[in-house]
Amino acid sequence: IGLQSFHEPYLRFMNRAHHAGETEASVKRAQDYGFHNLTIDLMYGMSETQLGIEHIPTASDEQLWQRDLEMAVALNTPHISAYNLTIEPKTTLGNWLKKEKINPVDEEVSARHFEQMFTYLGSKEYEQYEISNFARDGQYARHNSSYWKRRSYLGVGPSAHSFNGTSRHYNIANNALYIQSIKAGNLPFEAEILSPFDQVNDYLLTSLRTIWGCDLGIIEQLAGIDLREIQKKYMAAFMDNGWILIENNVLFLTPKGKLFADRIASDLFVI
Image (cartoon, rainbow, N blue to C red; front, side, top):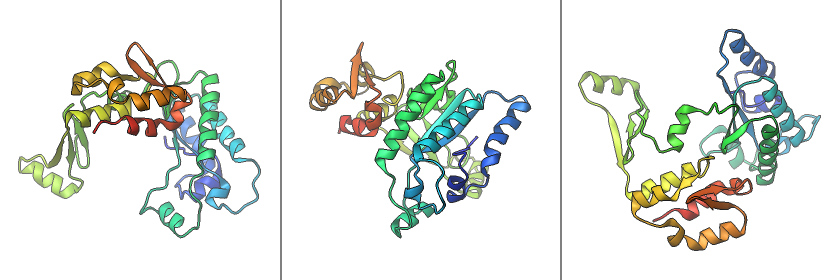
């Protein structure tokens, strides 16, 4: 359930179809009807100053985020996903940023919110098994875990993606053309063949985000390379910074390193 926030000004700003009162009520209705295996989505990194929300603030950005976290935990859902606010080009927020109606996302605010979330949800017995995902009692997202663990998956229908380990397939997005092609006995998709280095980079990008880490033995199997050797400069620097550690030939991000996950992965990419 995409709650995003319990703070009404944020929901209005993001032009969400629901209001703050419905965020809590929607989860409780689902639970009342017997659905308990639920996940809720939250968004962090938002700042009333950054978004240019014009009203008298009643709390700091950290206090507002803490309230969102506390209300999410109070709903007693087994899974919480939390994503940093990103502003993409050619979106409403992107256009507002271009016209200077809003300010860029403040990385310091995002970092504080991330650490605040990690600490608080951990104290409430939520395990951060992936950078943006927290679960109680091992109730991990089985679907998304397939991506992170490099498992094959089949996407059916317009716009769906598939992966078989060595290639990705993208079904066309147009509903009418998709149906016409299926009726004609054709599967309308584009394929991307992944080189061994592509496979390594994909695995680095996803596995580093998880509690299972990046198995360096798998990288050697995929491309015949010793990542510790060919990227020893970056490895040494990241270890000195306290961002990574290696145990039993598996590379993990430290809590501090999770703040720099994308940078670490991209620096370790092989080309």
